[in-house]
Length: 397
Ligand SMILES: *Cc1c(COP(=O)(O)O)cnc(C)c1O
Image (cartoon, rainbow, N blue to C red):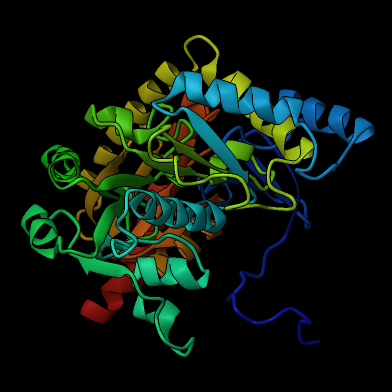
């Protein structure tokens, strides 16, 4: 029977019915080690007792009231996010794309509030991914995602990732902000280098632009820091978060300084669901775990272990793995074979990894993954490499 779902995804012949820690159990009872985390979403893995309790307790009390009323748990989560970061203000959304939409709107409004409504352009980067709404596909600039959807939303000027000179040249009278993923996720785990990211801050300061970070994938502990900007000793003016922030419950957030948020006055933005009590219960519960003593330090340590294990893998299979890159538990393997084929070979070994751009598979295990699971997972990657190599060799012979 054909599916009643819109066929925008090439879904694998695999469905899961439950999860436990870093493991997923399929509807046929098979256990998979999950090094994808539902694309960096299941930050605390599956069936985490603290998250389950927070969500079920809230579910028994109240699901939704709308943003017409006070949101005590939202106030608390916003306060905690501000205390843990550069930010003074937070707005909650339901998704990453919505967080980026507000990031874009906020940057435009800040420039307008400063008497420069013409500065609605943002500089963005090749290989970026910011979501699938009309504005965020324009910001991401991927022609595959823009094709057939009418005129590209104006206001995004794209330059190569890592090219500071190109950024400087692209700054014009309409430029109001720079939007960057410090570590590109979908683009293939491309880590912005220190001079580049720090250089963007310097250019923003020099030209009076806002620096906006998309940390939907790189944030919430993924790199061993709460947000990746901390790795660079740089602070953005606006930051978009989502994915791991809700631990699997749909939640996004925009974090901003008081100054960057100054244009977003009464009535300038809104959302029906954003920041609802269920989402806030999950967001606070995720943060409880991430901010607990030693948790992020341990993520960083596990990131190094993963990296070291992957280096061994790359050394053993140089004809399949060309490069390893990433930070913490956000790693990518650049391959000599199609990443979708490699991910299929890994699934055959009961390991989930996620294809990305630039011929990379992403490795994004839940942050609660154990050392032993890291070793098991990399062992399965080695088996996938061997299978890919065996499949490749007859052609070459
Ligand atoms: C996933 C992602 C988004 C979009 O998030 P959605 O929740 O799918 O809308 C935006 N930016 C980055 C960097 C992402 O990885």
